[in-house]
Each structure stands twice: as C-alpha cells, then as structure tokens.
Length: 221
Length: 377
Picture 1 (cartoon, rainbow over the protein chains, first blue to last red):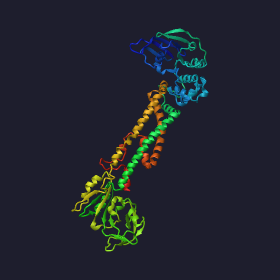
Picture 2: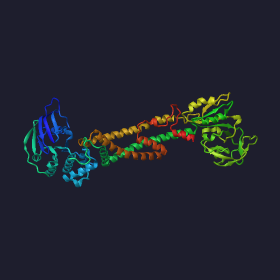
Picture 3: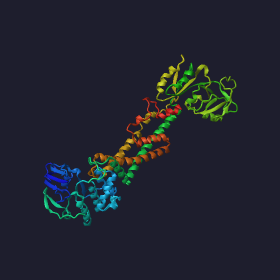
Picture 4: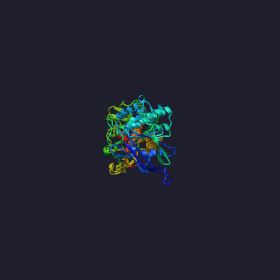
C-alpha cells in the first residue's frame, strides 16, 4: 500500500484563506509518519481529508495498493482518536469485533481475529470485560486492536496519547507503532516522544508540510 | 491478510452480523433497555387497557339495551290481528334473530294452592323459544318471567296443573300438568306478564301481535317491509319499537367509532418514537463509530431496528399481559381485552374502522359482531 497526496488545498469558507495550501505527501507500506504543528495549523483537518471524513476541494488523495489499483482513502483507513471512541456498554471483544465486521467477517471469525489481536496488545485476558472498566491506556489499545482487526492498511491517529501518562503512552505507542502489524501509520501529535518514535516527522506550518528530520528507528514490539 | 469467511466483494457488514449486533446492543443497554421495556409496557398496556375497558362498557351498555328490547319491534293490527304463520316465517329471514306471534287468551287460569289468584294466559307460536334465547323447546312448558315466578313461588322446572277460572270455558288450558320454564321475557315488554304457552294454536290463525328481534343494522329495512308482509287485507298494520322512550337508545355504534381512545395507539407510538429518537440522538456517537467501522446507513438501520425490535418486543409482550389483566380486573371479557390491547400494543397498518364489526351507515347498528351471534344462538 502506498498513500499519495498531491497539491491538497482546503479552506472552510469560500472567501477565507486556505488552511492547507498545497500538501504533498508520500507514505510507503509499513511506514509511520508523525505530523506536528501548533494548534490551529490544520493537522486534524489534514487527517480528516486523508481519511475521507471531509471532501477534498482541491488536489488528490489516493491509496494505491500493491497491484497498482488506486482507491479513495475512506475505505482504506482505520481511526485511532484522542477521545474515547468505543461502545462503552459492550465488552472489549465486542468492540474489537467491529473491525472484523467491517471486513465482512462472520461473528465467529471476527471473535477469533479479535482474540488474536487482543493477545498482541496484551488484553486477551480482559476480552469479556466491559470497556467502561478499562483505563484510558487500555481503551486506546482496544481501539488500536479494533483498527488492526479491520485489516485496513492505513491507520490515522489523532493525538492517540494526548490524555495518557508517560508509562501508558509508551505501552500504547509500542502497539501502534509496532512495524510487525504491517500497517502504515500517520500520527498527529504534539508529543515530541511520539514524533521521535516514528520513521519520519513532518511539521505543518502555514498550510504546508515541512520535514523535521527523520525520527529514530522504532524497535518492533 | 485474509481469514476464513472474509468477503471478497465489498466490505459491508453481513446482515446476520448486523442483526446480532442490534440484539447485543439491546441486551448490553441494561438499565436503559430496561427503562425502555418498562416504558413500552406502561404506554402500551395503559392505552390498550383503557380502550378495552371503554369498549367493554359500550358493549355492556349496548347489551343491556338489546336485552331490554333495543332491537325488537312489535307489529299489531288492532282490527284484524296479525297472521301468525307469516309472523313465524319471518324467523327465517336473514338478519332476523327470532319472531313469535303472541295472543292474549282473554280467559285467566288458576293454579290450586298458588298465590295471586287468576293468572293472565298468553298463547305464542313455537319460535318464542328462539326469540327468548331459551334452550330446548318443550310443548308441555309454560314460560314465565323471573319476577312472575317469584311472585307465585315457582322455580324453573316446577310442574303445575292449570285449572279453569270460575266463569270461564278454559278451552285454551292444557289438560295435563305443564313444566314451568323461567325465562328473561323483558324483550316482550310488560304487556305479556303472565303464563305464556308456546306452540298453542292461535285464534283463527291470527295473533294480537308479532314480536320480532333483528339485527339492528337491518331493522330499518325490515320495519319498512313489515306492513306489507303482515297485511291481512283490512285494518292498519302498525309497527312500533319495543322501547318507546329513548332511555337506552344511545348511538352505541357512533360512540364506538368516535371514541378518542381509538387512536391512543398512534399517540403512544408517537411518544415512544420521540423517546427513541431522543435516545438515538444522545447516543449518536455510537452511530458515528459504526459508520467509521464500515456500517453503511442500511446496516445501521438494521442494527438500530433490531435493537428496537428486541426492546419493543419484550415491552410489548409484557404490555399485552399487563393490559389484558388490567382490563379484565375492570370487568372487560378476556377475548375483548386481548383483542383491543393487542391492537394498541401492535398497531396494525389498517385503520381500526376496517377491523371492527361495522355494518351499514344507519343510526342503529351494533357495536360488535359477536352480539349478532349471541342473539342467533
């Protein structure tokens, strides 16, 4: 999978200035990119455009699969958000199964997949507990497991560790940026530590992406 | 990566998975789902029970009206009398529950040892049994009202030997003992208080009056035809309602069709719908999550529809039980309570009007179709 972004421009009102003034981005398979920038610089807007949550006004966003076929991004991305985005009354397993359902899996197959990924994120023994009894970091790991079960090749994460302490942040990043799951990841973050653990870090400033220098390689697991 | 059962075409949810998700969502809702079940139960049961009780009271009122002779007409011809044979044949006309020719014998009878002295005696055609809805016809029976029997100290099944009153010929009197049948004779009116002997021949084939009980819906047409059917060639045939005053003559059919509670199910449905949409709005983040997880609008509709079906099904089931029991406690019969509570809890697409025993547009209609059957028994 390869994400290609060309000349992406966006503004919220017709006569307002552009928030994004021409974004170009290439993301390879399994690559993790951090996008940083000051508040209001358009990081979340960029993420929403990449994920197809808001329509592209100008420019092009494509996900190109290994066979060369190009797809709109909406069906190719899975989300990991800062705010809790789970069915709080349901069990951990039920929440992770949603990712499998999005692939058209039956319930039994989705449960198997969920269990497999919950083991990867260290929550297998809590699969039948309600999500509401989990801590913030555990819930984020549930969300990441759900995104991985969905099989979608691109994970878009918006401040995934914004409300977590340092230790919990580390455990969440270990899962999210684990290269062994094979997904590409774009992380919007204010946290230099998150940016450091990605393959690349880009700074969004004045509507344009600027390289901040390559991040340190991240060890698997 | 692909696992067993993964779909190659598209990425939409399986319908069965969406249904299962709805069921799980309803069950996981715990207190909220329980609250909704209670709400559905309370709203459905109360509207259904109230309507059932209202209808039951209308039915009871109408039944009293009918028992008192509300759908009975009396045909008389003071000059020539009414042909008894023609009167009896009316019983075979569609819509006529029963007809009987009645004649005041004119000579009283006595019973030795009985209180009250001379007893008025009436002769009637054999169809009187059917008209009075009394089981079994017995040519050796004399029919009396309950009040008349009580006055004489008779009970149903007594055997009585009638005797000629002094100064009378007594040619009408049966010579052998007669079995007393106590029956509700209110539909005949007070004019026929006495001992009535069915199947006794009438004078010259004519009777004083012909009493006809008929389907209220067909009564107006029947009343129009009776003067010609029971004409004897001279004298004026008079057809009159058994109930002269309008004491009971309410428009039960109109009251049934215009009762406000008839539409209570729609109000209840609207209320439940608003509650449901309010809850959905409060939990819209769940729908957004389903959307990001590839559930399209149809899939989300299946999930929410199933969730509602589970909650409404549980609440509706309890509503039927509670509504029927409540209505029965308020004296509504079971079948009526079950019918009307169900109609409120499970609103049918067709209007209640089309499901009721409506007849024609005349002012005198019966509220319920089952009353026709009861009369015909």
